[in-house]
Image 1 (cartoon, rainbow, N blue to C red):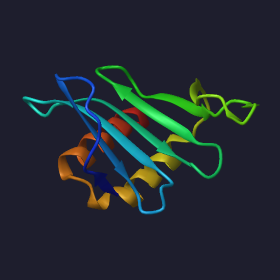
Image 2: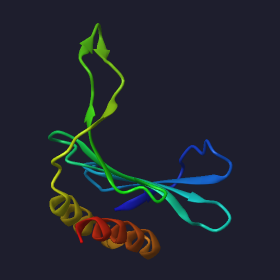
Image 3: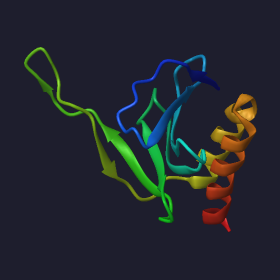
Length: 122
């Protein structure tokens, strides 16, 4: 995975970071405090070419699972995508996918996300 360098920053207190892979089949979004570089939230999107799924962690909350619903075709285009909670996502599979692509990630980011997965798996 590599980091997209130019990403819009909407919150002055947080730095938003976006990582993707070369085939654009997965994304990792990170929000961290600007001063201490503390990760406060992440979203890991995967299975983009099938039924796209997301695993989110925010603050001290446990991991949250969802699928991306792209809506029904309306007129010339689709509706805005929304996250729909979905139980039954295979966390072991998601973690394996993350580990396979995370080798090039910043070590601090990689270790943090992996630790959140491992907390839930244990």
